[in-house]
Image 1 (cartoon, rainbow, N blue to C red):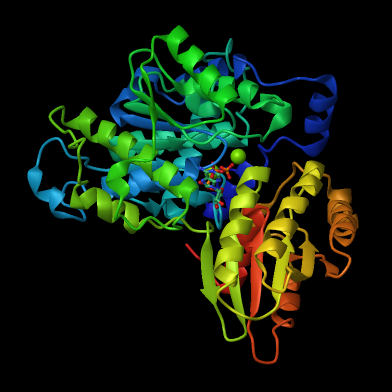
Image 2 (image 1 turned 180 degrees about the horizontal axis):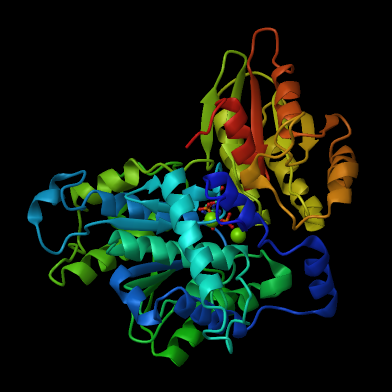
Length: 500
Ligand SMILES: Nc1ncnc2c1ncn2[C@@H]1O[C@H](COP(=O)(O)OP(=O)(O)OP(=O)(O)O)[C@@H](O)[C@H]1O
Ligand SMILES: [Mg+2]
Ligand SMILES: [Mg+2]
């Protein structure tokens, strides 16, 4: 990388060069190579190479969140609550002086609209300028000290995409004086890049289910083992009610580690708090967030305690009710279309999304339309049954989706991918031939022979096609779901600008 190239776009190009190519992923899969403890050792090596020791991360009072579903939502709730306590910030919590957060960091994945939204300070995505500057700091430090910690991180090497971003977040937050940072794990927990954090203010495990089977295992128990890896001895840990197999693994792992793991029911203090959507899963996320935010505030001010008998302070209520977490259960209304946008991409979360859409769209007339993709995951064919059935069952006419459009995640018809969405991890030949989309279409025709099933080579063309499907009088009711990349691209197109 030439040192003259230093813009945001240059940073994203450099970052994209750290993606593991499709061929390498395939080779590893075939050889059965899974991540193991070397990944965290490697992270420690890189951390040292960019100038930090794991103990430096203690200054961030990290709230660490793992889980199959609801990680991002839980993190967003915690961030939004903490924002109300920021010194000089939002609510009247700002007057208190000591013991309040000065700056709050938020690290989430994947991104919806732009890479830089994964690293936020005081809820705002890092600016392009700051992202580029910090990005090349880290890049240069890695190159300047190739030999340091060569045992853990091979000399001359660079960390892969997600690990680089995690290192970048530490550099950003420590440089900016962040004193509470909320961290979403990438994949799993035990071997996740974020697991270099040794003394979190609190760890939280959201709802467990099946995802990333190749890396984490094919049962909820095996998956729970990985997620449990973020719990640290002597540090507070929380989870929500889980499937029995998962609950048992979490309990055992907590015991081994000497962690007092608290299993939270839906918090009764949420009664009367308008959490959106008004669904059980979101109340579980909110319950977890309340406990995590309380621990974070207590880490800065040991006298901070919520009244267990309730009610929640205004700051908590506002934080929960006013959270902004885009691409999840979003509704956007146009002249001829109501768009329902949700980034669900696992079997369980797609069921939630279908139920949510069926409930909302059920209040209106107009043809129901599905825009769906899930690139590179053939098992997603199996997610379509529940989606089809849930929407059909909730339709008084028993029709369900009248039109179904399967598209790729290519953003635009003519110019291809937005830079932030370039993905080397999928087989380009499959995208070109629309292999997965064809398999989805075949499946849907079996599930519902009455539906009009189509393919679209890009998100833009899928949206154009959906707009044509509005009834004479009634707006088309369009659910866009299956992939966060699809949803992010769609929001960018619908808003004709970066939705950031
Ligand atoms: N606790 C939950 N249980 C089941 N589904 C959920 C839960 N929380 C959220 N969802 C669904 O999953 C979608 C993604 O939520 P969120 O971004 O919070 O999850 P995540 O764990 O960060 O997922 P990702 O794997 O994309 O990082 C939501 O739009 C919603 O449909
Ligand atoms: Mg995931
Ligand atoms: Mg997420």
